[in-house]
Image 1 (cartoon, rainbow, N blue to C red):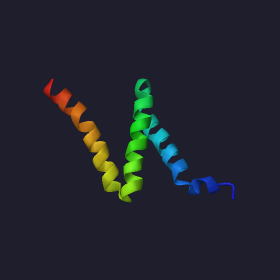
Image 2 (tube, helix red, strand yellow):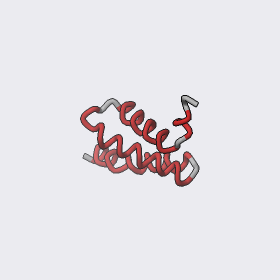
Image 3 (cartoon, helix red, strand yellow):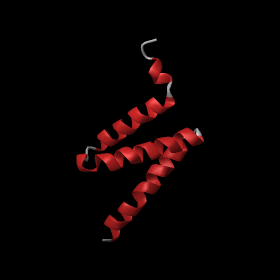
Amino acid sequence: MPMAWLGNRWVVLAITAVLFAIWHREWWRFVVLLWGGFAIGIARMRSGSIVASTTAHSVNNTLPALVILLA
């Protein structure tokens, strides 16, 4: 059972959140992206659907996109 820890959904969530933050390659915002990854992952865990996490990610990106678009 060397990989039994992969069955723990909180470990998987933590790994996914770290990968989410790394994937963005914005090191100055790493902590914010990490917490965002946790929030989006929890939306997925609670709902049981990837639609919830996709919606959470889209809503999270809407305000900055509007600021850039309208500035």
